Image (cartoon, rainbow, N blue to C red; front, top):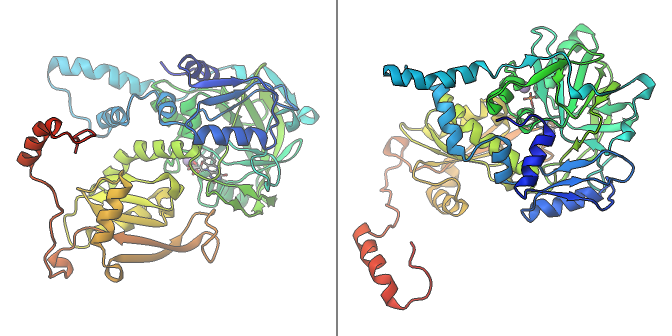
Length: 487
Ligand SMILES: Cc1cc2nc3c(=O)[nH]c(=O)nc-3n(C[C@H](O)[C@H](O)[C@H](O)COP(=O)(O)O)c2cc1C
Ligand SMILES: [Mn+2]
């Protein structure tokens, strides 16, 4: 059963001891951030701050900040469960026999039931503020870090429509609060929201924008999913939940918003307008420098009678977004494998802040295969940002950093095995010589072949023979050596 809304998810977390309600009075300026940071770094629970200085609205944070909570959010018991679920749709086999056909029916109806549906009304419209009644100061918006330029909405679902195709996009792009009814709109150049905005700019038209804050967890997660442009995040959320996302027409803009949202901001972005945004303590663990970004004018705020403000903080890893990133890695791996089939597994270690390091194992089939894989990765969606790609053979476990270091570093002849390219880099990369344009490196750490010009012999990795291991397993308890005899 899908979570109906954020409260349903919070209740489920609380029932399982995964949520702590904090009743002490705390400030949204830096204090919640410090508490949330300590909690996530200690593997702590999600937090609901009920008494926030300056606002009557409670703050939920760290809702996704552990693997267990991320699974709960996506209603999965393991990543394997997802692989199996996806396999049915990616590789459908005609069901065999009457029993097989009967068993397939629920799956097919499940698919039919996940398209977003429009409803007439919803709790997100219980209270409506328009025009001069709009005041973002009523919300407990955080200042996350000392050098931040101000308060930032960090977990918004920014909903826009493409001017040409009319297709809806949902993206999570942070928003700096400038005053009671304007914010920044930090969609980076490469993102779908920015792409749609360029369409409005060409036409010299205002762009209507709606921002949902606090929804059921799958819908929130869909806003960070790196889907190809034109593919609906709300449909993806429906697929994740196994149930469609109910959408309701916004009050003052021509957009559909999740009817079960806690808070919705409605307004517009003027195509010509830019304003200084930042600095902001970012997910790189450093402050992103100030820069010019579009401005969001909030013309209406709608909300529940008793809303919860959902937020997160990013900063030196590991943070909540690291767990969200891991979910992206695991959920998208089966899809990546469909286009880059040689990939066996991949891993983006959390300290690589998602796109600085990708470890990928391949089933190497032809000379130069590792380099082909790197270029395929750099050529696919947001994976273009990957600064370092290390390609290893299929027998290396990319989730074990020690094994990767050992086997990858023994396998390389640096002058021969580095592939250095230029191209687009993440807008948050502050080391590249130019913004958004720089270099990336691939490391071919696969075993080298004769066909690749390697004429020497390649040694086997050391491994004890199985029969000896079995004999010693049996003998171990009698040897008087402390510790388990595990291998
Ligand atoms: C907590 C959090 C904050 C984010 N903030 C931004 C941001 O300010 N700007 C941005 O372009 N992407 C940001 N992202 C990443 C985007 O949400 C992500 O790239 C997503 O795929 C964008 O949606 P789109 O593909 O529809 O453009 C953030 C992600 C997370 C998890
Ligand atoms: Mn998108």
